[in-house]
Image 1 (cartoon, rainbow, N blue to C red):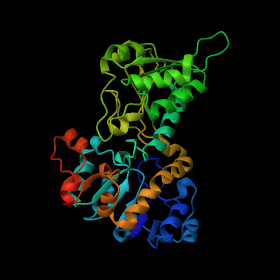
Image 2: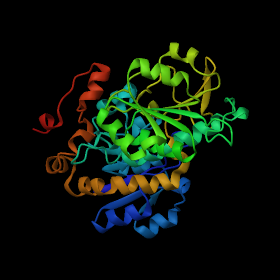
Image 3: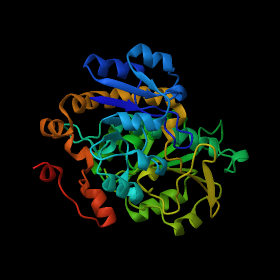
Length: 371
């Protein structure tokens, strides 16, 4: 199979879909690899390193898209890339379609085979390709929030770890999954006072057992959320419904009861966000203020630590990519049912039920299309 990767064109996105080490793995299985010149520069990989690994370097993204049967990316294709996608081409990347009707329509119209990292499952029902970026985003959310709390950044002037004789900062985390747990560990490490909410009593029990008296656990109800965020210096939105739009847990009317200069970091912004007032921002202008509350809505947070993130991501995506390349997508799906939910669009059919529900569109199961 002819496989390639291109330079990510999302603002301040420095990750890349394939490392030179990944290229070696594909080449050893007799695949042809193509890399856009400069694609790896943001993560510290030179064209020479890709050449040494066995890839052919092409000058433009258009050449890679035209040449390849499968394009391996990091972020979703943007509008400039829509004309480059073609029928039958496998696009293997993060998609987050439930928050992007325009991209959904583009993928359906071009009849590409779109495989989303974030909806592929493992044997235990987890999200193995989302996990590494979720962990990194969770850690970064606290770093970013701590910075935004500084007075020159417009925040309350609160140090999360406090000081001798001074109260620590209050961090509230909505969601006890991968993102929330990573954020919790980071906040604990900084010495903050941490409250975490979730709808799973089993998950809260586990977190309470492991972290004992270092955190406060609360069952996630509308009343508990409203009360907790009203006392928070930093709120982390860490809610995920795989493949679907995030539920709006923080309402506009809640902001008036929050501390002025408090910060909301909504890690769920890729899926529309769990805060009603959040919108996507970028690393060069990451925040804005609504009703005195600082909002941080960077949708590609791990892109800021691109080298770490690229290695973590490609470690997770490589084996499935190799399986698709070896067998073809259709045979790979039949051989590995955990890959099945990753196929979001196929040959003009919307094959992700959660996305279909989000946009009130027709859903067609992948296996029905293949049959």
